[in-house]
Amino acid sequence: MINKKIILECNYNAVLEQLIIAEHGEHNILVYPNESTFRDIYSGYCKTMFENNDNINSNNGGIHDEIVILIPSYETVNGVKFTLDKRTGINPEKYEKDGSLFVVDSLKAYSYNQSSKYEYNIFSLFKSILKHAESIGKKGISVISSMNSFYQFERVAELLHYEQSLPQETDLKCKAFCSYHKNNYDMISQKQKEDLSEHHYRTLMVKPYL
Image 1: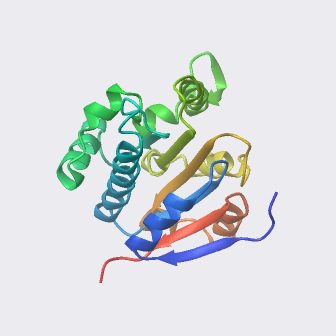
Image 2 (image 1 turned 90 degrees about the vertical axis):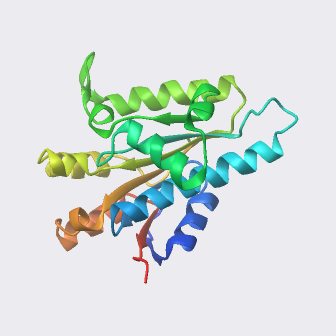
Image 3 (image 1 turned 120 degrees about the vertical axis):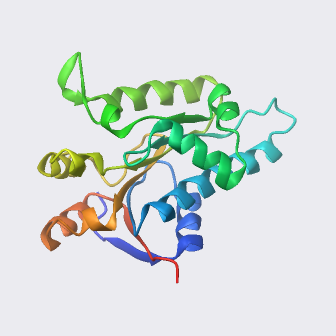
């Protein structure tokens, strides 16, 4: 495990660049100031990844290099799709159909698997989508996941335990951004924030628009 902590304060453009250049295997924190900024971030990331890959792979049947998984909590699944359409012009159904995009409700993702009360649904989801990515020739997956449902249902202690059980880096072809609304993030103590940082490769603090 890497011992040094990487904590960056970024504006929207800088944080989007950090998401793009992050490598598979990284487990990161994203702290954003408001929901509008979070929508800009995930929709901007999808637009960059999908449109760039469309251009690169235009002669390859539209197959993209990476699968993007969005896990919202303060928006519905349909709300995220609406955001992608209205803010970027992306047709989410197109990318869902070709297997490049998955949108999964946070409460469902972070509930326990019915077959094992000790395993969250998100782990079986990752395994399934990673296998799918390999089968269709994609390089890996990116996950932008809202952790706010833990706060909504007063599961903060469980959230901290979950986050600290995961390493900063893995050998999985997955880059993950555990995303927190700043108001929720500030509810935990400074010691807890430091513990979270120790279990993530980098912490990205997004500055509000001026």
